[in-house]
Image (tube, rainbow, N blue to C red; front, side, top):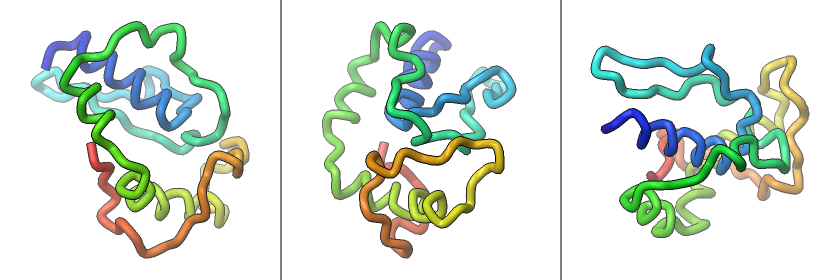
Length: 117
């Protein structure tokens, strides 16, 4: 996948999860120039979109996949993460999550940790 498309997807993803801590230290690049996003400990920590101004385009394939998401499938994957965050399993320097943004978490669903996109 071309580099510009990967960067656009990274910005979109970080906006979706309100990741306020994306920096060069938590981006990896493999031998084939694939962008790998690591360290999401400060996700869901803010109501603002951290890359709103930088997010100027999105590729059609990714946009179609995002549009196809439904709340039930997303929550199935997100609930275990949200439950851990609400239980206090977070980075010690991370700000407290805005609980208004997190739905009631029910541990035990979506244990594979994969997002549906």
